[in-house]
Amino acid sequence: MSQILEHVVSQQVPSHHSTTTTSGAVATSSGAPQKAKFPFGAAPAPHLSSSASLREFDAWRHKFKGYVMLTKISSVPPIEQRAALVSVLDEKWTRILRFGIGVSDDTELEPALDAMEAYLRGQRNILVDRRDFYSRVQEPGVTFDDFLARHRRLDTRLWGRGDGHWLDMVKPLVIPESTLDPPDSADLFAVGHHPLNCLGTFPSHLELGNKRTNLVVSVIK
Image (cartoon, rainbow, N blue to C red; front, side, top):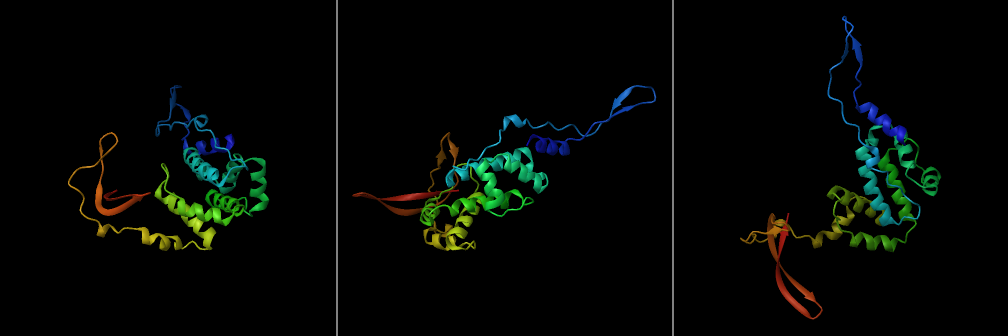
């Protein structure tokens, strides 16, 4: 693993050669300033155990994506990307990757991770996946693109599709921005007195047990 990372860094850091002048003095070639080498020890590789649940796998994948970004692993050839991936897997996951999911050694990281997730989902009851599909929310630190990609993978797993079928299912829950009432004149602030951008409001009815009330919901961008 360390050899792969050093190979990446060596490609990124320009070499500086010493040359001897006619007077015998040694001069150093002046080029672009040397880039600082990333301290790999500051970002330990996240390891994945075969006992990990699907939720734990999802959290591991998010950490591993950040690790790949920091160490520039995605810039090396696919076969070296595979070596980097195997280095963070336990023995059982390594066997699954080699023999259980049919992913070749020259497959890039994202397709390989997708195949691993599909394999893990295949070990679960589909009813659990459906519950996960309907209850999933965008968690802190997860970009909307990642959130959308995970729903598409679930869509493919549950209904054999990946064409946004799930979007049709949630459309009745969506409130078009054009139907919102103008925002209240009062400014809205988050914790720390940070101003919030209110797109508009809509009336709603809330029931909690035998308690009922009407309220106005502000939509924050």
